[in-house]
Length: 319
Image 1 (tube, rainbow, N blue to C red):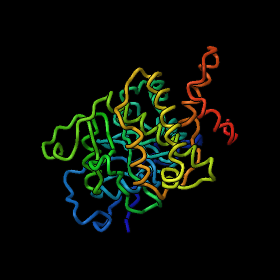
Image 2 (image 1 turned 180 degrees about the vertical axis):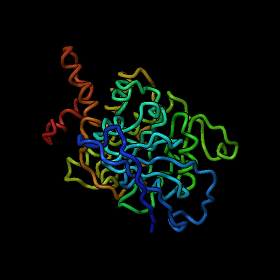
Image 3 (image 1 turned 90 degrees about the horizontal axis):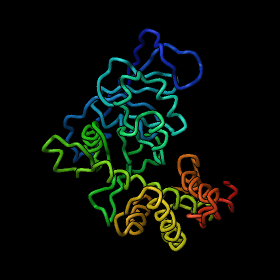
């Protein structure tokens, strides 16, 4: 199990994750057991990081480090003087609090691991070119080893990172036995394990994952919260119809063209994380973006670009 030491510093003047007055700045420097990392993995050059959020993803990233990371929990603030990436692993609704808890001079070091459409929020904060990660790996319970999202259509893996800290993220994930495609690679050895991913390619990947999570969760919720694998196996026609609809709407809205065989890639990923349950969650950040396209079309007296999506949301009384 991971061991930790707690340290205290002077009162931090910035806001914490809550609306309460600032509490004394507390953080943890954690050391992890090598047994948590696959035996075949060689640990090399994992850059120390601030990890915001102690949930499943945050703990997994902490376990991939070398004991020099700082774990920031709810009610704590990001330190001024710790150099390196700040890995944000909180719920989307906590992003505003995280930003207010982070010194503005460090905002360009934030690395967002969130699912869903956070692009409008990032743009509203002047962070349109922020570091981001699409985490195509699954962690069922706190402390469990992540399951990589390698599939039969993408055996190299689907996890992708973008921004100046992309190489550091890739190094950390590789140390934990996970794959990662990243942009701005400078290390020759790392290049052997990663693929270059620019901004446009990353945006397509982000939208593709958004389409997957909105489609599989909505179809699964219609059938009682069945697992992702059951959706792919028994309700593929519904899933495929919704994927096609949302992909068309996203492509038209963003003015881009997706790579061919999206349905095959997303079905393959569903098989890779087949045990996961389904539910429509974080509507504002996920299905809500597509519903906003429907509402915009309605206001302009245009046809709904996502009629099936709208119908099923109404069936579940989500809207």
